[in-house]
Image 1 (cartoon, rainbow, N blue to C red):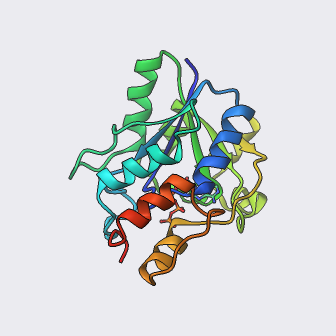
Image 2: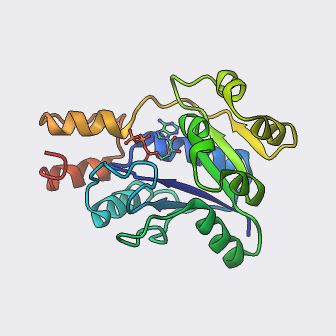
Amino acid sequence: MRVGLFGGSFDPVHRGHVEAVAAARRALELERVIYLPTASPPHKPDRRLAPATARLAMVELALLDEPDLVVSDFELTPGDPAYTSASIEHFRRLHGEPPVLLVGQDSLAELPGWRRWRDIVEQAGLGVLTRPGFDREATLAAAPSELRAARRAGRVRFVENEPVDVSSTALRALLAAGAEPSPGQVPDLVLKYLRKYPNLYA
Ligand code: ATP
């Protein structure tokens, strides 16, 4: 089965995480996209995240109406930084085909800092989601030549999704200030969850 993998902190999940990925699934003809909330992002070791159980629960709630978008706890091993290359290998074995790794445009710019990034591009195709504020050509121009070569070879594909201008950082700031996100920013059930647990980001 041809699947996509979509990793992140999802702290908290928002509409950008759902709508851009739903568009990518259709554009890249993936049967399923598996969201992989991460326990402690190897590239953000100093940031304290909301509990993994809460982030996982919110991703599940955000995806309830999306039968082809699912969540896995594969990267949620506490104290064991999850490396994308290991997840790609796991899901390749499970589904018998190399997965496509979905990343936002900002993450594409950071990719050359990831452990074994060349292997990641080799192991999996890359689907890059449009994210407001990031320029595709500028990112590619600044990227190592292997990434540009991978694009020419069709291993890096850009998805023309409708841009959704929301970030988890902005949502955490809003929630910490005691304000409520708008329904345009987070799915309704996630909003209900955030109301039920007001101390998550206090
Ligand atoms: P933070 O603000 O905490 O860095 P984030 O909003 O970037 O969070 P992450 O959980 O870090 O969310 O992102 C997971 C993946 O989703 C990354 O590949 C990121 O680039 C992508 N992404 C996040 N927000 C958007 C968006 N609005 N549109 C498209 N892609 C996005």
